[in-house]
Length: 453
Image (tube, rainbow, N blue to C red):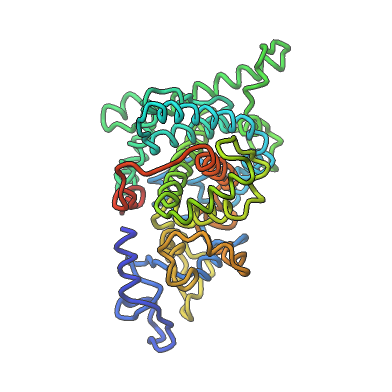
């Protein structure tokens, strides 16, 4: 649906409501950055209003019906109540903070080294690599390690084709069904697993069982450690996230949830973290390889800093101007959720272009459209152009990247995603000569499965 919304915005163009009748909320005949997509639902493609709606302290809330069809009921992603979400976020956030990510960086670099070993083996054999599967295997292992303290081990699977990767992928492809019939999804989730599987298979529940088993095992290990029965090497399997979820003092007003709720949270974080980051990596590789000037400039910077063919050092990456421009542009052109994200107008209403919207009106925005708004990014907004981040006032563009959302609902994994993306792109283009194999621009087009309705 997001691509039809894009067409409508392009068709109706920009418009201010100064000449519209005073009692008009939205009328299709009036051109503008706002279109009606439902009885009381509007889509807004305006950077300033997006920033206002999503700012810290905003009273806009997530739309319940929409999120019930895409999130487990007790996971932070789908939490509607701002107070409940604030408490849960305080518990989870330190694990994904810059310091939390830095604590995992040596391990992440180790797994990246293993990924490069496999790429090297393929290169020696002259065999192309399916980057979609390879990068998703890598990111799944990373996020499962951060969340659960133990990786899933997908990097070791033959041809990067682990069944769990297919399950996670199928879950996203089927998500339009859950979105279209949220009550059905909620009903199935409330039934015993065997019953729901017989009625309508929900693939993600198979991975949920593994998450639950790992959480149960982790809790048992922590109890053994507390009783003086710590096993050798156990200190290597630490999850700051689980430790905090198990700590009643992790945040004011926090109550330690059940294992079922912890499983829902862990599974949601893994599902969100594996796919979005890997897609950004894959798109980044494609865009870089498709633009010889970009790839040459990037490789030159990396070769000068680290030496051609040598491993990169994560601590040095932040100072590399062109690499960071490439990472920013990759994030602008890729999105965890390309489709619309609805918010509900609070009880006091909201003024939109001089018109007062009633409480309960639903406003949708889309990172896909906001990140390509020519009013912000210029006439070349649809192009992959890292140089836009090298001009003097490029810092002013930073606030307009909608990829991770903004405010209190900003993606928890923003620092982890940045770390993974910069490490992978820097390593691939410093160690290997990367080229595209039988992949076209059409192959890289977005499919809005999650928000198709």
